[in-house]
Amino acid sequence: MSDTRPAGYDPYAFEPFAVTVDLAVFTVRESRLHVLLVERGQDPYRGAWALPGGFLLPRESAEAAARRELAEETGLTEQTAADLHLEQLRTYSDPDRDPRMRVVSVAYTALVPDLPEPRGGGDAAHARWTPLSSAAPLAFDHDTILADAHGRIGAKLEYTCLATAFCPREFTLGELQQVYETVWGVELDRPNFRRKVLATPGFVEAVEGEPRRTGGRGKPAALYRAGAASALHPPLLRPEGRQQT
Image 1 (cartoon, rainbow, N blue to C red):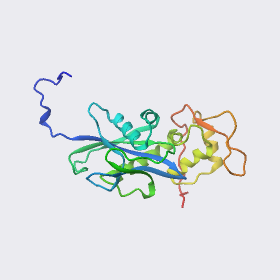
Image 2 (image 1 turned 30 degrees about the vertical axis):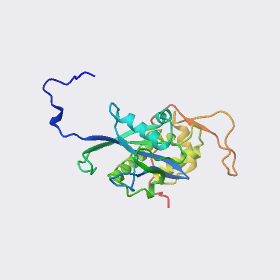
Image 3 (image 1 turned 90 degrees about the vertical axis):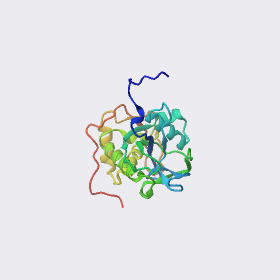
Image 4 (image 1 turned 135 degrees about the horizontal axis):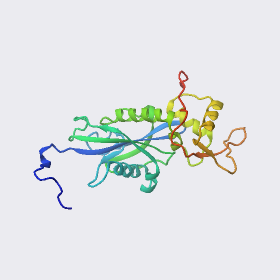
């Protein structure tokens, strides 16, 4: 590739630094919010748990790197990883956040339906799904990144259809309610939740065919899939004062 730098520009006039991506990947397992963690196999922080991530490759965008790392750590194909909900959280650039050198991290958060046990990739010795409540302490500044990511998805559940990203392609309203309860840490009134979901245009759409038996004594539950809407009008606000024990 030809050099297209302006005449007289010196790229070595600035101190070099590296760019990485870090991923806060959430899923719901056994009615609890879990996050994907990796055990570091190299220094610094060898043996400590951290969020998955890695350095950008030459000619690679931050989002492409994030999806590549997501595929490597979850065992998904890159095509499947490309279809999952992934959004940029923020950039973390404290000069001393990495003891190796100046490293700027572009953090992403991903929401996935329940997946098989993950595998370690790159410099990770092991990978596992960990309940969010027992995830800390983490290496680097990953506790801060994880807390920011959890706050982001909790807020977005109020005014977007993001909760359906945690669900399988076809789901019951009970499964959707469980996502809200798990992420928010509150109990929701079932009839009221159902009424609000079905009254919100484009939030969900009914699936034709046989309903699903949920294992209870009641009648089989109807199945739904994500609707065409991306925003909730009106928003589905989390209740206050009803924290789960």
